[in-house]
Image (cartoon, rainbow, N blue to C red):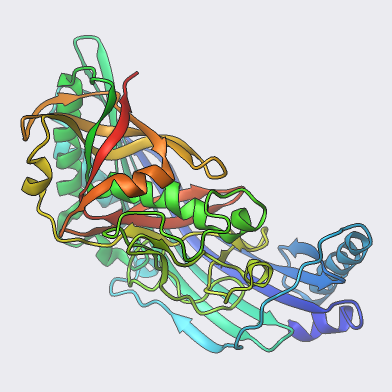
Length: 457
């Protein structure tokens, strides 16, 4: 593979890499008690990335034969040469140690050896666990597994093969009561084999979702205005990912689209706040061993005791910012070039108890998980919608609420976090979109924000 590309790129590339992928997948969906999707397949392909004269060229092909690889290399080289004559800012790459060998994430229960019926049973058991609740109007569950074998070769000497299994389960329940409609979502997703579902975890998760749906259907509109907020690990993780993680992505920092630009080494949060992005944690959905530039990933301490400490970096953005690459370049598939992406982003544990967080709150909100939102990294603002919420009065959790939203300025909220829990829950999975998708995780402990803007529908 590398020789074919080398021949096509003689004298036409300052740097190049070739990445091939072989993805085996199963995709299942069940609506209520009927199978609505069942697909098993394989996708293979390769891409060539060329850096010439400070400009990038990129081309992909579904054919791994030498003629197709040479043709893709030629297209990428011609693109890079053409662009190099027109761009002002030239791209360079920060140096890294080369890597060689095979890195494999093992499976205790190999889903490649399982039949479709065994995987469908996961969705059937989900339905059976909650089918008798008469207020459930619709239930959709889905399962997906992927096994990705990727080979990366670079012109500066890296030659690695990575083998990565991932499983993903999702449940969506719609409930109806007295003309009101509410919905709830739950996910289980890991970088491991089918052992992710040991112990019937999907059944427990489905029943928990029903309990949350009951609270939503009984919920009242929230108060609005500035007030104390306690966030559960799910919403804590969403804040870490959306408000802090995206602002820490070095491509946004380097282009002036992050409120963290120029703030490395500066205090931006309370001393009790430490936020990490870590792909090295075994089993989490956003975990991996090498990024798609062949850089071994490491723990990135984005905020260290309130001080902005690091960004998530590719080789190119590391060169622009004068920093060291840390394994933050990821691509959705061989159709895409690697860009800066998060992995597992979370707030580190503190020492407060949940009861200590409740104490002293005359009126506030307890929020759990999220049903979406938006963030503006350049302005440093965010707005999240809680999936579940409860009113806090006189230090006690009272009635359930619905349609609760939180908004604020990231740099202010980091200062307003006044208690961080001693509990720590990781593994809230997601599919993060940024022009291309990437599996990610987030989490953290419970946190208390002394004041945050709360609103309703």
